[in-house]
Every structure is written in C-alpha cells, then in structure tokens.
Image (cartoon, rainbow, N blue to C red; front, side):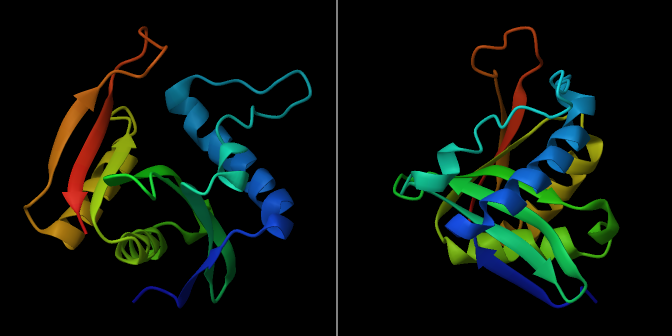
Length: 164
C-alpha cells in the first residue's frame, strides 16, 4: 500500500525547494541526457523558470507521510493536450508506489488528453510511464517517437498519448 500522498501546488515561496530538487532530478537524468554540471557544480535550470509565471503551466510538490518526495511540472493547461513536462520522485520514495500514485492523481486533476515524453534509454521511466498509462487508460493509449528539437544527435523521445 502506498504511503499517504499529497500533491501541493507550487507557490512562489516554494521556488528554492523546487530548485534544489531540480538539481537531484538533473543529476538522475544526466545519465541519459549527458548533461554535466557547470564549473560551479550545479546543473542548468533548463525549462524550470518557465513554470513560475506562465498561466499555461503549473507544478506540484509531492509529499508523503514521510516528507517531501518530489515534484511534477505540467504544461499545456489551456491547449488540447496537457504535457507532463517534468516528473521526479526522490530515490528514498521510489518502489513504494509514490510515483504511480502521484502520477495517476495528477492526471485525474487535469482530465483530458495527455502527452507524456520520456527517453527509452531510461528503462525504469519507460516501464513506469507505460504502467501509469495502462492504469489510467487501459489499452487505449499509444506511443510515438518524436525527435528532440535542436538536438539531432540524440535519439528521439517516446511520447505516450492517452486520455485521463
């Protein structure tokens, strides 16, 4: 049984917390994205600043009864499909159904069409997102490969397409 879970909207005061979690997230993904930290020892903030002031985007902190467990960032709130921009669960909370519970709760909070990108080179993410898609949409989901804009040297991302 998963621990008790709360998705709390990210507020302005949460920005330092999210930025610290972003460093852990970026480190995890550096294995698949090839990103290196700067000479100051930090990873680029990437798209993170876009989520603070754009009404078409939102974010959530994931809390369990044990504490802060991660974040989720969503874009496309006013479009035809929402996109799971970024999703991160700290290692101590993984394999306890925290990510699955958070992802399915998040999809239900924003019903409609969803697109969820990930890299096939990250087998844990590939298994995770396909399990979430099946839990939410049964067999009524599909995947497609899309090139990464501006990065022709990288393999394409897999995008799951489903309705929640």
